[in-house]
Amino acid sequence: MGELTLTGLLKKAAWDFPDGRAVSACGEFDLTHARLQELVDHAAALLAACNIGAGDMVALAFPNTIEFVILFLAVIRCRATAAPLNPIYTAKEFKFYLSDTKPKLLVTPHEGNQRAQSAASNLNIRCLTTKLRSADSKITLSSIDREPSLDLMSEVINDPSDIALSLHTTGTTSRPKRLLLTQHNLASSVRNIKREFKLTELDSTVIVLPLLHVHSLVAGLLSSLSAGAAVAFPAAVRFSVPTFLGDMKLYNATWYTADASLHQIILDRYLSKPKPAYKKLRLIVSCSVSLAPSIQAQLEEAFGAAVVEAYAMMEATHLMASDPLPEDGEHEPGSVGRPMGKEMATLDEHGAIQAAAGASHEVCIRVPNVTERGGEEGDPNLTMEFEKLSGPKKFSYEELMIATAGGKILGKGAEALMIAGLWCAHPIATSRPSIEEVKLRKLPSKRLRSQHSIDQVLPRCLGFWADASL
Image (cartoon, rainbow, N blue to C red; front, side, top):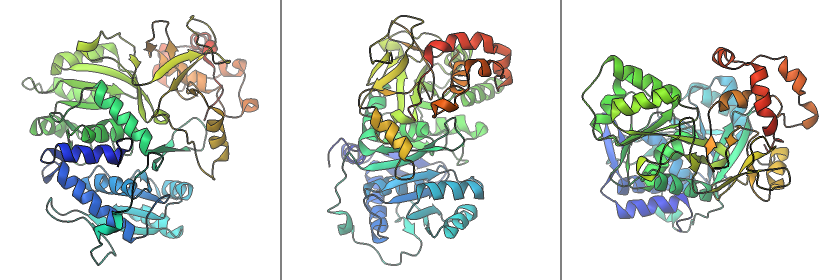
């Protein structure tokens, strides 16, 4: 099993660090890397006994639990595709996402999920529940009475082209778009993250964001496991401010990743109830939304750790660019740093590199962790748009950035630019509003309206309109 697959990278980590802690359920039990791999292989055999194999879709409706980690990795070990779903979706949302992904199987925690199971039943989708009772026990799947033979998986060889993960973009149109990521996409991304943040078997983190988000799944969980590092889930299952710092200390966390809003919450909690300096923390990563320079400075002062901003997109299997670590270069306030493991440039409509400020261009990237797949039979237009892009993949439709000649991608003010820009990024060109129509609209956020008028935003956007690539 080659290292160009995520399953290959994780098997290698289990071989290199068999006794190292891999996953912890705070207050319950820990799994080593070797034990995690054993449980994944066993769960994969259970799924194979349910006739799950290459090309099948399996929906997983879980909070942040060890069972989710095992089932997710087991699904892709079977060469099937995992489709994580938010366990707190409404019945209507479950119906939509299950109808769109068309899974062969829905798996939920042992206690079940009535809304998900009801929606699946109405769509004739088989439902199973799962439970891991202790570190020494075997994971169970309901309705599987006999023990499966591990020989079921002996001839299953994962391929880099296996579609491993199905996610939905929030996008700007009314219907979320399905995005498919391969084993190779995931393996390439976790290697980049591991290298950029210098993750090793000595690192440890506590998961903050739900694992159904590519940020948390790829950066927090999978990159850590591939490095032989340790991951802990909060004592409260989902993120809890009162217990977070205690969990960090309990598991000797050396880093964590979150979005700007959660960093603000963590900082406010710490400042309201200061604790002795936590010296093991070396790195705080902020992604998804721009982090105010003042908050970045306060986080660094409060925790004595480097705070780096990163820029990510689901289509690039999370990370695209990041501030360097302090020993590797200087931070630039408001910047998301340098390209990470990929080619990144601003190109004009003919594909020529543009460096001059004010020129019409869009940010493009070319790298193995960029998806080639935008959808399946149910979304031919999306797939066709991806197939058109035989060269660099163009992404300024989804999230606008301003590029400088120095090669850094500036994120300052990007949120306002993005919102204004997306009004003119409807997938159907003839349906896009004109600039004049856009100027009559208001920015949707009160905070943005207080900081930017549409007349201020639009002139800065004009050079960055992009044809929709999704």
